[in-house]
Image (tube, rainbow, N blue to C red):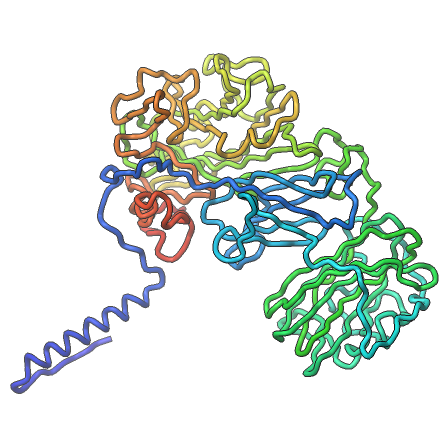
Length: 634
């Protein structure tokens, strides 16, 4: 775009000032239209930064969570699974980060390591989803513990018909039920409302003429319909006046079975009372018991709700009912009914088969991933210790995932470490190991798909390294054997642009324990990873603040740029407090060769200098957080 200005007459200076002001405004507008403006900070290098005292570059925090499952159920003979999920950018569940079981009182209590910037987490179990906030409003802390109570919203009274019409016991089901089904299959028909068909009954307790069909009840019979928007169908009850009624269906069930009814609800009204009901029926049509869950004021965004109940003696069928008492519009979709036998436990470990990750192994029940299922974290090293490097943190880049396999009592019996060497930006041949917070004699053995010779490291029969007070495991001794150089003249592997990308491979290292161990022993805070030189096992590099193993050479401490002082618990840092390694709780996009991390992540310094209070999500792909000119891509 071309702008031309013509200045004449005696007011030239005034016009020049006016035009200059316009140009400044124009430039500001143009700069604000950039797709991804980079946050610009003071021009400082990593070596010039002075790290606040006590700041250890930690990116995880440990929280305590207590989940109370619905109290109207018994947990004396079965352990029930509870899952913790992280949040995605849309405020919905993202990745499974914790799995465990409740005790005989229906309570699940665990410590969980989560990224510091986490704002919300989700719990999931047979009774549905709940969420709790870690920052901002809605904080539910009692004695330092986040409490989630599944009893909130539950009730045991049936819907009251309008105008005082009495609930009359009737033969609720005139048509025969379908064959009994159990397991994780949805036994409800047309739960996605893809079939545009509704029957009608006068009241929610009226006889139902047909199985596998939705029936509108009460006043909803005049306002219920199926809507299709953008290829998705859902049920809608639309009324301008106060209306009560809903949608119902019958499923087959028998005494002792666990039945759950869930669905997504949204509303376009400020005064909504929306309920999910389970109503077990006997052979005479009378309701035996009522289980209800109130989704009060669900709002315009879809909200998932679940009601669960144990079918009492005399049950021949169970009525599921979605019921609203409100004005305006209420939508319902993705209805699911699960019917499960609680006595299905092949390995007799107290965990029902449909919740047991290992239903035929009494010693194993749950899988527990860090940083999450189908997700990896990254260790990024500088490898010139005790001398400082260029702080591109790409001399060794290792993606990893930890799977702690636990028994029915939430005790760890096996640890699987999945690693992937993604980049080698240094010429030094380095190995990689981990140290855990338990004695070596508590380890039964290991299994690994990486081979190395006995001349490189010394291992005991159970796979732990000889000469260590704590269990230490060598994952590999030479990263160059796992990420082969492409031979194209590149000075590094996967850190210099313009050369061949070497596809990394995943490797699994399994640790078997002699006896079950508390999961607290294996929190990420007790995970001590390190690299070491292949030609000098005693030259180790750990995360800042983490102690070396017993085989490290103490004579190297305090030499070069290192100020390690074991007597003061100061390890692997420079005089300014800079580390030689960082542990990122996500897959880290590292910088290109010889470009320090500040160039690729301009807010990294702001995070450091604020002691981690500002920009604690610096590693995420958010607007202004990355300068892709300095980040490796292939």
